[in-house]
Length: 120
Image 1 (cartoon, rainbow, N blue to C red):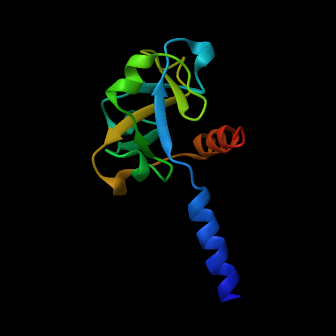
Image 2: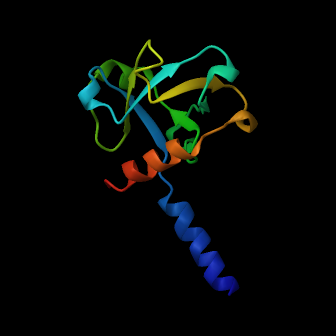
């Protein structure tokens, strides 16, 4: 039984996909549409931006850099995100935190991620 649990744990950690974000320009290219908010209480999800793509291995840990922001084209092995100014258009209102313990994701976001992971 212990061997099975260890095997499942190893397989799970090898298959976890990081949330590498690619910002796109048009709505038809986006997997999700978000609006960045200034206050924690306004948000649907709270994420933390990490400095390395390998650190983005759990829901709520996002990685992006300036070169990805400048491409504006969909990349199919990354989560394509469109930023909007309006809350009624956004799928999620996102607050960016500096602490890992403040990360909060809801069930709808996790379901969207599972559907996105099934593409690969």
